[in-house]
Image (cartoon, rainbow, N blue to C red; front, side):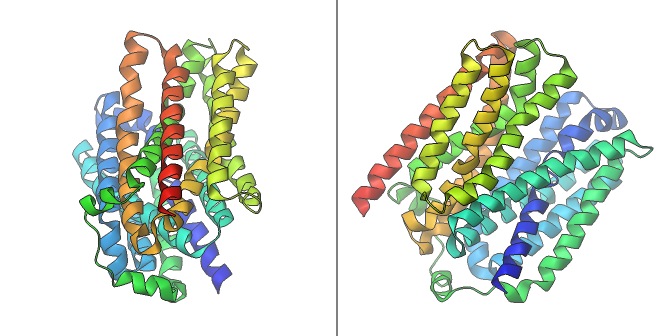
Length: 386
């Protein structure tokens, strides 16, 4: 039964990753059909991100009341509704409206499932869980590409992913009896939900939030700007740069599969430190004058370095802060991460426009340094607490 539930959770995380790249891949066709500027994609993506922040902040109260299984099922159902409504929308304002349940659902899945996995499964399963997200995030663009390349349209891409999500919702609903809480977690559920101020007052909470904020900002900024960096700094054709920029996400997906095996020997803190060290090596490969091959190798290493950081930080939360506080810390952390996703990648835009896109590695390096310092400060506070 435990293995069956684990398979269902993996499937849920594939569902979480499937829609992540749809807007970016479909928008060149979508904005023309709706008659809006290309930049309006930012409006839709911001509404989605705000929804994820709200649901992440509410996750502690909702999960303690309803349980992780029900929250995950309802959340993916909300994303399915949003996706299917996208394909039926005839006006831009309708996209904005349906982006609300889309975002609320995504944030609910992220916070609830990450905490459930951290409480009930070993670190290796957390790494493999996030590689499932990579599989979903990689598959989504292929489905949208199939729809755009054939005699269909972007609407068929959204419809296809929406139907897959509905199928996953049905499986999750049928699996609800498997979501049995351990006794220690049952005790945690009667504990009153913590306020934002209570969470921030926990020793080490600020540091882990800053570290997570920087990691997510680094990952998203690289994903958004790597292709532009290769075009304008590396003088590569756009189609070549697009393919090569994917090496970063390939590094993350493969790295998380490998990380699952490394956790047999290394604990969460060691995995995070290893990942940060590889991130610095990858950034050195991009910064130093090794030519195009050095840049590509640097992107792959940057992805490999990022791979263990996210799942290891998430998995360490119950051990660092206690199982009774883990959902509250997890929700605040996820909300902070989504704020980072909203702020840091767009912030590099003016730098690229008015100074140079060649500053991208230094921008990423600054985030990596703050992440490393925050993580080491966290370790110092946790050790003192112990």
